[in-house]
Image (cartoon, rainbow, N blue to C red; front, side, top):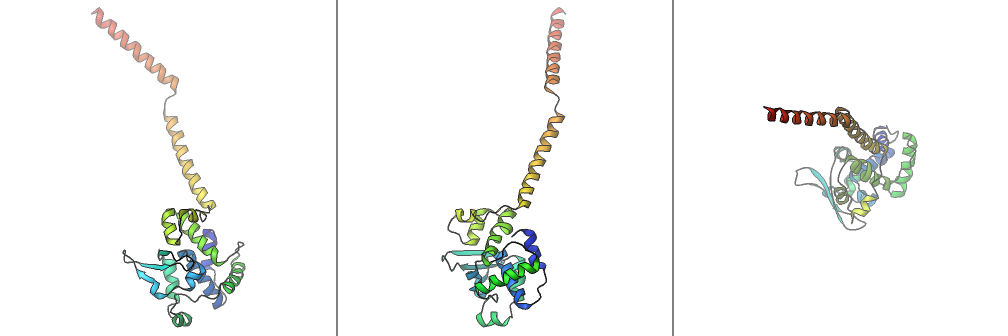
Length: 216
């Protein structure tokens, strides 16, 4: 998802509670990078204080068993707080009220239509959005993203490096700035033929001064 689509999804009012909950779980995935099975299994005990005294998700991926540590962004913390006393979460000791993957993907299609989002939404797209739009496109180093996603290698993470138009535009603006500065610097430099003429005149003056000193 692009940043614009993510913002639209976050802010669009949902007409019924079931769609609002599915939207919130999806957005939570977008800001944490958790796969569907990992957000389904996410327990309150997986939310821990890190060395920086901030709240992190510290757990293991269900699919690979590899560990992942993800600092919780404000957007994710707000969603956690929203469902702290939700009956399903209390009964399961889970962080969020996650339904089956199949039902969630079905509701996501309905949500996309409500929000006017043309791209297909599914639970895996949320993980890719975290890897591309939320982190890599905001200059988070790829090796850091690798650790948060629980990938085995950077090569896996490179597949998430989808470049948005905004990222391309940002890089091209920086290039334009450098080129403009270089051109401006060039304009301030005197032409080469003028420099050569000045050097020649200086040399002639030196030679004339030397002859004058000899004559005296």
